Each structure stands twice: as structure tokens, then as C-alpha cells.
Image 1 (cartoon, protein in one colour):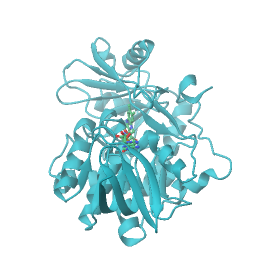
Image 2 (cartoon, protein in one colour):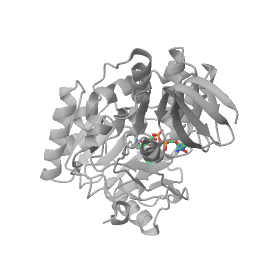
Image 3 (cartoon, protein in one colour):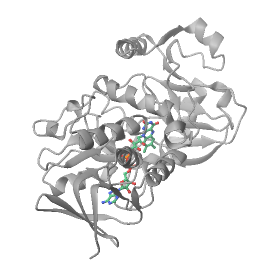
Amino acid sequence: MKRHTADVTIVGGGLIGAWCAFFLARRGKKVTLIEKGVVGAQSSGTNFGSLRLQGRYPAQYPLSLRAQELWERLEDLIGDNCEYDRAGHLYCAHDGEESAKLQDYAAVSRSYGLEIEDLGRSDLRRRFPWLGDRIVHATYSARDATANPRLVTPAVARAAKAEGVEIVENSSVTGIGVRDGTFQVTADGYGCVESGYVVNSAGAWGVKIAEIFGETVPLFPAGPPQFVTEPVPYIVRPTVQTVDGSVIARQIPRGNLILTGYPRTASDPVNNRAPVPLHKTLSAMAGLEQIIPAMAHAHVIRVWSGIEGYIPDMIPVIGESARMPGLIHAFGFCGHGFQIGPGVGLCVSEMIADGETPVPLEPFAISRFSGSTVVSEKFHSEFDAEAVGR
Ligand SMILES: Cc1cc2nc3c(=O)[nH]c(=O)nc-3n(C[C@H](O)[C@H](O)[C@H](O)COP(=O)(O)OP(=O)(O)OC[C@H]3O[C@@H](n4cnc5c(N)ncnc54)[C@H](O)[C@@H]3O)c2cc1C
């Protein structure tokens, strides 16, 4: 078997692996990134493209804000803006109960320095006249943004390659051993990479890498169905999201409206399939009609979903393995990895190059699964029964 050496081997070439590779190479590390398919073809390339700051898991804000600063410098960092657009995000409530939830989210966001505007009915009619009448209250964050997921990961990987990263595609990591304190990573058709560190950024498949070292995570694969319409006149500037997540929509300047909504549906990481049940298109369009009535007659031209790793507490695994020093996990991003991706890459590069990162990552440690697993309040309402095995 052909032998190679590196400082760091990265397993998985989604957005997380690509950003880790980029920042590690910038710190002078010799990096090999191994991807079983092509870079950015899984969740990282099929997601909705929202860089939302409002309403995040509270402990994720330091990471999320760090990531947003990097998104705001994307073109300087990688030489491509990937349709990054600071379009804003409108979080919408139908009634008092949802409105109270919005106020809670806004209080947390503000405590981290975000500017959140509170908009009542008359403000909404004046500023967003296309919004449906059933929305009684919304919060607006101007710093929230979007980018084109199809473009981002390949662009980050190209930038990483320009910094010297070896990118190996169509090669699956089939085993990882340890000899004399050095990892031996076996990759189909490529050979064995010897390295001092391994980054597990294998997305919904990350649990398989963790299991090699006796660690397990209650991860399951699923994805929110996505829809795109034909181009229609461009009227909707911010991303619009109902608090219950049943409708999330954004329009791109070319005119197409991109639409998604919960509950998420089951996907199949073995056969690499993420089917969208037919009825989801009808219910998504019915939801859209309520929120943006002018879009009710737009034709859906394509539907898709993705294979994302979810964990019942709805937060990812980030940090060093509890059993194997030098193995850094960064997987199971629970539907939020596009936004925090650059922040995760930077933190992982610091963990390896400096032995520490200034961002508190303790809530994401894999050791949290040694006792009983916490279940997020969103867990039951945001997934189809078959996705979570109910
Ligand atoms: C439909 C959808 C919509 C979403 N919308 C948003 C959104 O709007 N905003 C947001 O922030 N997030 C969103 N997300 C979540 C976001 O896309 C993910 O959290 C993020 O892309 C995860 O990146 P990743 O690199 O961890 O995973 P992936 O993109 O899945 O990359 C992991 C890679 O590892 C490779 N791999 C796995 N096993 C091996 C192996 N043994 N050897 C080699 N390679 C391997 C896989 O082929 C894959 O390419 C959405 C997700 C989906 C599915």
C-alpha cells in the first residue's frame, strides 16, 4: 500500500473539512483531506444557504458570531464571494405565544450584541408590504445573510489547495489505526496517510469514525425538504421564517424563490438518497401562500433534500475525542453547520496549532453522551416520525 505523511488528515470534504483544511494550511500545517465522493456534494452543497444569527442555541453564539465575521470577509479570505448577501432575516409570529418566543430569542441575541428590531403589524405592512396578513409580529436582524451553498465548499477547497492542501476525492476512509502514537488512515485507492492528528468532519457519517475509537453518539440522518420556483419578480429581500419553522423562504436576485420548512424528513446515508415525499411540495406551497401571498402561483421547478446528521439535543459534536488524543471531532451539525462552518474550521485549526481556542466549546464535547442524552424541545415537532423512529 502506498504510504503518505501529513501533519493532519481530514476525513470528509464538506464545508467543515474544507474550512479546517484552509485554516490549518494557513498555519503552516501539511494537510491531506480525504473525501469519499466529491467535495461539497452532500449537505454542504444542498442546504438552504441561510446564515441566520437570530434564534440560535444560546451557547452557540460565540462560535456563530465568529463565523459571521469570517463570512463577512469571505471574498478577502478565499477570493470568491459565493453570492454572499447580507439580506437580513425576518422571524415571524402568528400569535401571542409565538410572539413571546420571538421576544425570548431576541433577548438572547441582544445579550450577545446583535441588533434586533421589533416590528408590529403597521411596521411590517410599511416595510414588507408583501407579507401575509396572518403575521402579527416579527423581529428583524439586518446582519443575517445568505450565500450559495453550491458554490461555497468547492471555493473554500480551491483556496485550501492553493495553500498546499492535498485533496483526495472519490476515496473513502475505511480504517484508522494508531502505531507509535501516529494515526494510520487507510483510504480506498489512495493508500495510508500517517499523521499526528485526524479531524473527523465526516458529517452524517461522522459517528462511524468515532466508533472506531469506541465512542458513540445518538446521531440520525435526516434533512428538510427544499423547493425552488421558476424566476418571478424580485420583491422579497430578507429571508422570511415562521417561528415554528413551517415556512422558511428567500428569493434570490435572479428571481427564484427558495423554500423549505419543517418537519424534516428521513434520509438514507447508505444508499446516498434524500427523497422528498410528494405531499411536502403541496404543504410547503400552502404555507408559502400564507406568508407571501404574491408567490402562491409560482411554479416549483425542482425539489431536493440532503443527508444531515442530527442529534436529539440539536447541537453538534465539536472537540477532541474523549478516548483518543489527537482525534478532533467536528460532525453532526443538526441543520446549522453552513452558518458556523468557517468558525468551526478556525477553532479546529487553533486547537491543533495552538492546543487551545478562545471560543468556549465545552457544550459540544462528545463526553456529553456518557450519561443520559438531553432532548431538545424542538426535537419532536421538527422531524417526521420515520426520521426519528417514532
Ligand atoms: C437540506 C438542508 C438544508 C440546510 N440548510 C441550512 C441552512 O440554511 N443554514 C445552515 O447553517 N445549515 C443548513 N443545513 C446544515 C448544513 O448544510 C450542514 O450542517 C453542513 O453542511 C455540514 O457540513 P459537514 O461538512 O459537516 O457535512 P457534509 O457536507 O455532509 O460533509 C461531510 C463529508 O464527509 C464525507 N465522508 C463521510 N464519510 C467519509 C469517509 N469514510 N471517507 C471520506 N469521506 C467521508 C461525505 O461524503 C461528505 O462529503 C442544511 C442541511 C440540509 C441537508
